[in-house]
Length: 167
Image 1 (cartoon, rainbow, N blue to C red):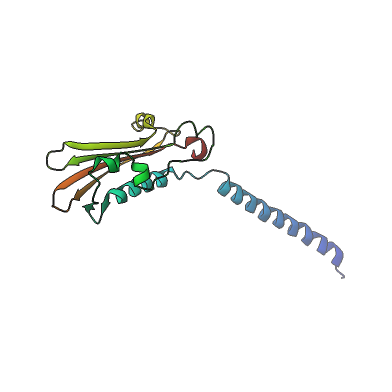
Image 2: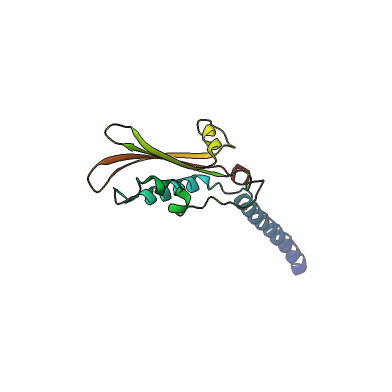
């Protein structure tokens, strides 16, 4: 009995194309699910902002010299090499997308020595709320010493909005 070799090749080629379409569909699905949603990096960005502010005022657990001079912290963006400029997406140039506040207190009495803030102060109102399209907020406290051994508490509040792009 003689087999039809041409018919067997046609059946194999139909299965071969079906497997190719299934593999191609799976690849398209994986790529679209991976790149289909924007990354929300605001949590990382708000942490980096707080870390940069902490590095500006302290080093190895000690207060940097000149920090308690009011002239140094009147302009924290310039003195700490911070940049709050953003791209012009959804009118971001008119309304700033960042906020940073640092409260310097005496550790033993808890009395605030001075406070400095920079950025969009309206963002603070959204930190207590929960939801998807709200700014990312972070509060940190540092306990540091000056060269004479006096201890201080620094409370750093950092906020990043950028809800139109990241959420």
